[in-house]
Figure 1: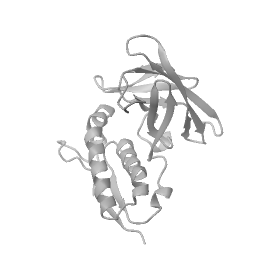
Figure 2: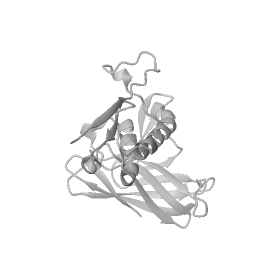
Figure 3: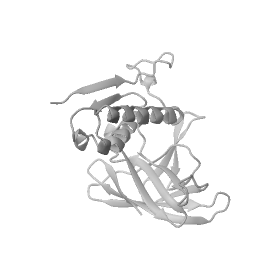
Figure 4: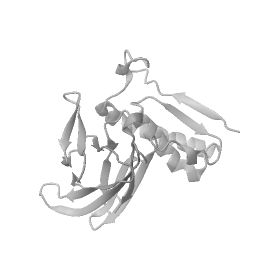
Length: 227
């Protein structure tokens, strides 16, 4: 038996918002600004659900990533599903669910947040999201650095909040903290890789290099391994 509790995230504090209007969807800068508060809310809600037996502790992280992916994919609107059926996350939509990958380097641990699967026909995003940070091996705090992405196919896209437009920045881009996406036309069975150089904060010197491997389906990209 399946039981659901859903809380509609209508963001009614935004004036003039209407679910029937394209203007109701939030742009990349809006989502970036709201994400910390939303993530804190979802983490707190997960604590309550686990405490009340509505969510298994073993499913907690997967549930949080699913809810955050839904928020990202749906422009700030979606549902928060409290699941009563064990194992329900195993059939969750991978094109919505976020994924966390990590790799150990001499400079620290690289963490990447992206999607399990990016499919252009079913996503409002301009490409596969790439949100990365480097954490110290000593105490887990963020290490100051820059991130240079290099693609052998496709290109990177950023959201220019000042202009309110998407900008194609080519096959190489040094991230400055704005939302970053990668897009290439998928061809079933093709493998691609993105190179990530962790750069010194002020010098053009690589502290470490990792590679993100991706597998393509008929109409999607799936990030597989970060190493």
